[in-house]
Length: 204
Image (cartoon, rainbow, N blue to C red):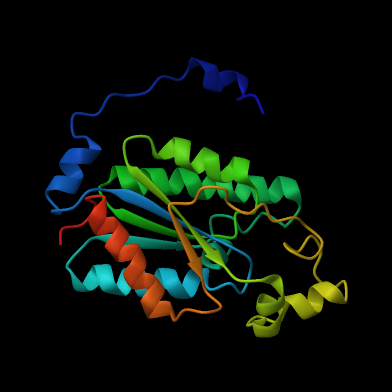
């Protein structure tokens, strides 16, 4: 999609305080930790546990949850492929701004298409981007069905539902691959935090 005509006359305003400076006073490095997976796989549960662990270390975080975002910023979007792409695009830009503020940004979003997740990675630019694939078999997600959405999707009450009537493209090379059907949320969250320590986002 090409930008509106007026946008072609816009230019970036240079800022004298950069992302590294904002992160430095927080004693951390900024990052975007992007949790992707099917509905019911456990993305929000694990992301919440990661934020608890990071917060306990005195680190500055923010969790962007897909459901919560749709109550405000993205309340005008549905679940067509076009709307899903726009949903991820908006969240990716918000995450980039928060990372630029020096935060460790956690994103829990189905984000079913690889191209959209790659856009989010590209937008992260100077900040570290960590893709976390929260992997649970479709059968397990259906068994859990915490929001009752799979049942509604099967009966045609929910259209364009990922994994049922809309595709999910699994990550090919995620930084972290979590098998949520066989691991406890806290155990998976510790694995994420250990990875962040290893790449220097947080101190040991």
